[in-house]
Image (cartoon, rainbow, N blue to C red; front, side):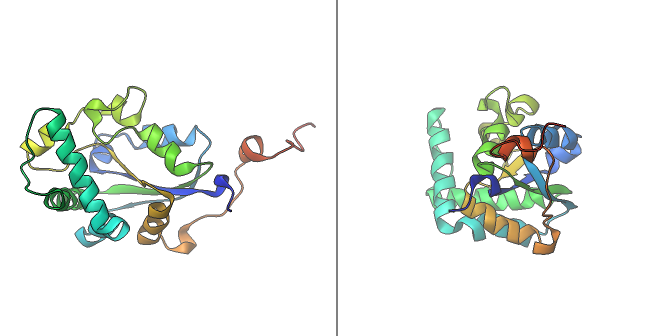
Length: 203
């Protein structure tokens, strides 16, 4: 079993995060936990690449689950989903997400550290900013909601995409980065975070 300290995840700062000048603040939130930045780039994704990031990683099961969650969110607010099936809803969300990622530059990052996938998602907050916890990136820096996004027939503007599982993260890394772009280096703070005996700290 690989040590959890080597777990990797992908974070994409979406167009709203870039356009609102939040790149530095978002980076700081992840960096100060002790996560190590392995790679970072600014790109305008093609629509095809954006769709790959969603569909190639999750497939039909992802579409079905995203559609189910969207339907539940509607029902939780006493509303009816405009889509007949979860799959139709999921496809509409994927298309809207891909169109949005393709609209402007994004920042794509690969991070590594102890339980990186779960940690990043905790720091990022829930998918819907309006109901996301205070103290998370989405809860602190934006206010969009499913209802507003659906009324406007667009993707929800929640600043960030973050890998959902370790398996998804490894697939996403291959979509966005060549192996040569992932930097393997020792971060000084890793000695405090991971070394068992803290050897070599005393002068």
